[in-house]
Every structure is written in C-alpha cells, then in structure tokens.
Amino acid sequence: MSGHSHWATIKHKKGATDAKRGKLWSKLSRAIIIAARHGGGDPETNLKLRYAIGKAREVSMPKDNIERAIKRGTGETEGIQFEELTYEGYGPGGVAVLVEVLTDNRNRTNGEIRKIFDRTGGKMGSSGNVAFLFERKGVFLIEKAGIEEDSLMGIALEAGADDLKQADDLFEVTCDPASFNQVKDALEKNNIKTISADIVQLAKALRDVDLETGQKVVRMMEALDDHDDVQKVHTDANITKEMAAAE
Image 1 (cartoon, helix red, strand yellow):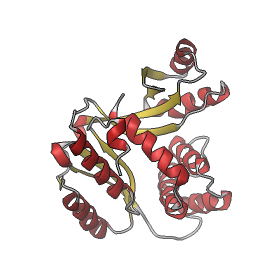
Image 2: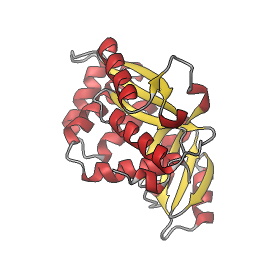
Image 3: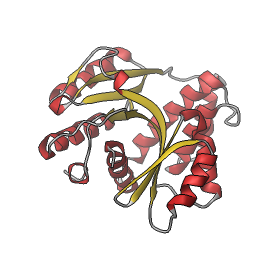
Image 4: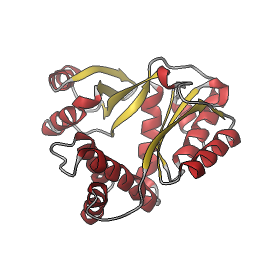
C-alpha cells in the first residue's frame, strides 16, 4: 500500500476523534476564501471551490461559516488576505517533503515552518528541490468490505478515474484533479462510501525507510500539519501501518 494511503488513514482516524475542530474549520475557511477569490463564488462553475466546500461539509462546518468565507473570497466582505505557498524540503532519512500553506504573513510562516523542519530532523530546501518527485492527483480510499473490485473499477473508470489499486483492506482510486468531483459524484451515486477523498501531491515513486525513520517522518508530518497555516503535507516515504500508528 502506498505511503499516502496509510498517512491519509491515520489522519482520518485522528481527525474523527480530535477536539481541534475550530483549527480545522479555520484552515478550511482559508481554502474556501482562496478558491472563491480566484474562481468566483459559484461552486457549480468553480470546481476548486466545490472541492473546498465539500471538505468543509465533511467535518460539519456550519453553513454560515462557509458562506462568510465565500463572501470574503469574492470581496463582498473585507478580511485578511491569504496567499498560497508551497515549501519543499527533506525529512529524516532524506525523504522528500512537500508542504502546502495558506498564510497572511509569508515571513512569519517561512520562519516557523523552517523551525519545524529543523526540530524534527529535516531541512527546508529551495523551490524546485523535491516538487518534481510528485504529481497532483485526486485520491479516494475505500474499504474493501462489501465492495466488488470489478464493479468499483467500472464505476470509477467510467467517471474519469485513472487507476484502482488494492492492498490490505483498502481500495485506492486515483484520478486527474479535473475529474475529482465527477468521480466523487459517481461513487456517491452508487452508495460507495470513502474513508478519505482528497486532492494531493502523490509521490511518483515511494522511498522505503526503516521503522524508526518512518516513525520520525510521521512525527514530522504531524508537527507540520498541526501548524495553523499548513493545509496539507506530502512525502515520498513509504509509510507502513506500524509507522503511522506510532505515537
């Protein structure tokens, strides 16, 4: 199974029991603001906004909060301006790490993210250091129980998915980001529940690491993910269940 699958699974389980809902809503509000600013406030024509709203609804973000974020993005109401940044660097064992950020203060965030890299055994690099090792993909994780692989593959491919893989107790469906909402709609229409549905930077080739290094990578990713400005964290490390479960 890919490192993404286990990282996404552990994040999903953590999020389901985590009391930090306010912080998560704040991060999702930023994503909605940025999407609305660049593509307008109609989720039917702005696929990035539709995706951001969908993520907000998954964690029961109130409708009023979503609407306020859209209005801030379209300029109907005033508010802090955010910009999108991507930080690149290396984690324990030399694995590649990619960090997606939305910030209202580039200098502050730059210093704080660099400190997290240093503190957790990594090193922040310059633009272009590791980005070429990843490709942007829509990824859906689906529990195998009660799902026929051939049926799932037919539904997913017809909706625009690129591939379906399996390992352990999960199916992993991947697609081009432009097809994400279409594939998501097809799965929902056929009552196929996902445990994770996201657009991520997927490693082109996974790097195997030993258990101790993998646990360090997971702790680093969790520290980065906990930062208020960080939206997503990606790595090319092949994260196993044992690594992801480490405290």
